[in-house]
Image (cartoon, rainbow over all chains, first blue to last red; front, side, top):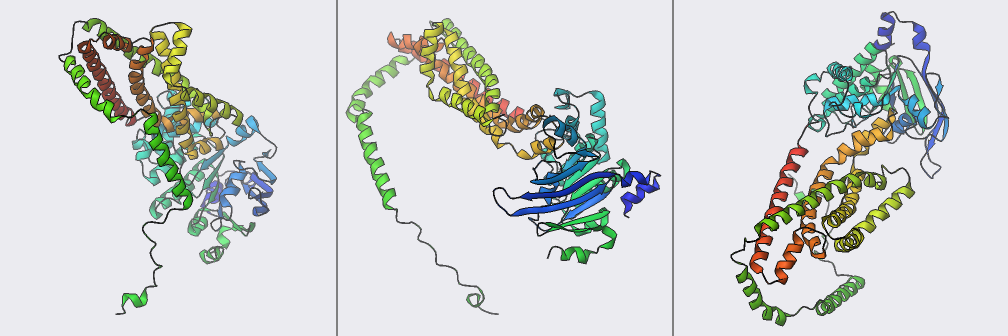
Length: 266
Length: 274
C-alpha cells in the first residue's frame, strides 16, 4: 500500500471508506468512428475511495479516450460507469452535468483561459456548482469565493501570482493553476490526463508531488494517465495498463518494477 | 577520416525551380488575360480622356486653395453628426453582432440549422452594398441621420457578425472542454471561455468597424442619409471647390483622430489584466 492509502489509515479514517467503490467501470468498449477497430474493448475495473490509480500504455493505446469515457466526455459504445453508486450510463443533460460536478479533470495542456488571471481561472472551478456572472471573473465574485480561490492558489504555492495573466505563466505554473481550479470545485475524484507530459522533469515531479499531497490531505481519489513509469510506481497504489485494445494489467504498484512496466511499452 | 560522400547517402535529384504549367492552367491564364483586356474597354479606360481631364483637375485643385471657412460652423456640426451616426451605428451593430455570431459559429451554435440560417442572414446583409441599404432606409424612414445610422447598424452586423463568428470558431477548445467536464452550462462557457478567447480579435474588428463606419457615413450623406456627405455634394455641385476642400480637410482630421484613438484603445485593452 503506498503513502496515500497509508496516510488515510494513519489518520484514523475507516478502512470501509477505502473499500467503498468510488468509480466502477464494467465492460466498457469504444470503436473508432465508422470502423470495426476497437480503441479498447471490454474494459472493467474498480477504483476505491481514496485510492491513487495510474493508467499506462503506449501512444494511441486509448488511455485518454478511456479517461474521457469515464465521465462521458467521449461516449463509449457499450459498458457501464458507476460513480460513487450513481450509474452514469443512462444519464443525459442536467443529470449528467450534476454527476460530473464531483469529478475534477486535469488536462495535459492545462486548458486555462489565457487572457484571464490565475485567480479568475481558479474561480471557474465554482461553475461546477453555481452558474452565473458571480463566477465569471474575480471582479464580480463574492468575497468568500475570492478568499477560497486564493486559498486554493496558496495550496499550490502560487498565491503571489494570483493576478498574473495565465498566458504569462510557465507550463508548470499553469498546470498548478489548473490543479487549484480543480480544488476550487471540491471534487471527490480527480482525473488527470498526462498532467506532466508538457512539463520538464523537475516541474513534472513538483506537480506529481502536489497531486500526492493534496489527495492525502483531501482524501481525494486520483486516477491519472502517465507515460512515466516512475510516477506510476511512486505515486499510485494500483497500476492499470492498456495494450492491444485490452486492459492487460491491473495490479498493485508495489508488485511491479520499472523493468516490468517498461516491457509493457515494448 | 572518411570522405563525406562515402558516408552520406546520395540525395535525390533537385526538382526544377519552375515547373511547366499544365494545359488547364495555361488555358485559364489565357482566359483571364482576354477577359481583363475586354474589361479595360468595359471600364471605359481611356488615356486620351485622362490627358484631356488633367488641366481640369489642376483647375479644381487650384480653386480648392485656400479652403473656405465661411461655412465652418454648419460644416463642423455636420462632421459631428457624421461621427455620432458612426459611433451609435457601430456600438449598436457590435452589440447585435455578438449574439448573431454566437448563433453562427460552429462551436457555439445550438443547432446546425440555426447556424445555417444565421450565417445566411449575415451573408445577405454583408453582400448588399451600404448605399443600397441607405436608399432603402431613406425611403423607409425618411431623409436624415436616422437612415444613415440604421445603414451603419446593418453594415456593422454584416461585417462584425462574420468576423466575430470566425473568432469564436478559432478559440482553443481545451478550456471549454475542461469546464464541460465539470458540468458547467453552455452560457457560462461562452462567457468565460469563448468571449475572453475571442476578445482581442473582437476589439480589433470593432475598432476597424468604427473606422469603416466613419468613412462610410461620409458617403451615405450623398443619398440623403445625413452627415457631412450632403454638404460635400452641395459644395461640389455649386462649384465651391474651396468649401469642398475645407470639408475634405475636416473629414481627413476626423478619420485621422478616430484611427489614432482606435489604435491606442486596441493597445490598452489588449494588455489589460482581468
